[in-house]
Image (tube, rainbow, N blue to C red; front, side, top):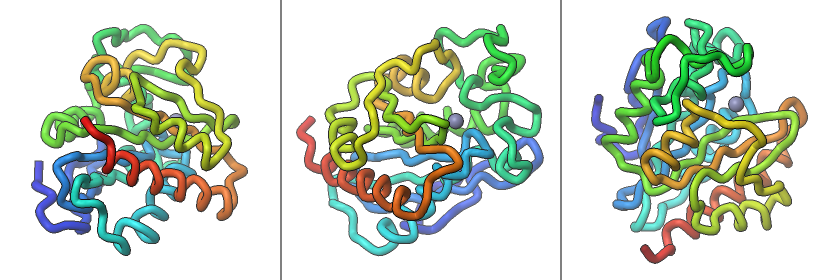
Length: 229
Ligand SMILES: [Zn+2]
């Protein structure tokens, strides 16, 4: 993988099934790396918009605490995003294709096809590699859903309370069904990296709503920078 050498510069880090670049950038110089990832479900544009807002209004404008750096992947599933679809170009749900210990080829729900093998998809392979290289301290995985919520995977170190206080979003430790192959399960359960699956409101999030959630994430970044560990 290409090194994210120049701070704030977006690099083409990998290619999707259709050969579209997956872009990413790193902000800050701190050793404690935070991931901000969106667009695993290509049609969930709210998460992508929020990450782009964070880049434009905050990450490129403010100097981050020297403790942290933020690796940003605004669209992990560019093919799905171009087609306005949940799945990648092979029709696979990338948030069921990560190589978790509990991964199964069984299609538990027709909406969530996990693929022929764990990490069979280039987009998932890329995410595995990115985690391997940067060893993130914390991951924000941005999605959107008819109900907005903060879904914690593993011990989220109190970040969930900061987000809840700022946004009023409900904290859910369990979304009600098992999610083998999800980034949350892979990172938190298999790798011990606290991960928040951040479900923004689908099809109803105006600018004010996104700004409120943006500010909540900014406050979480400050908190993560000061956390003793
Ligand atoms: Zn999603």
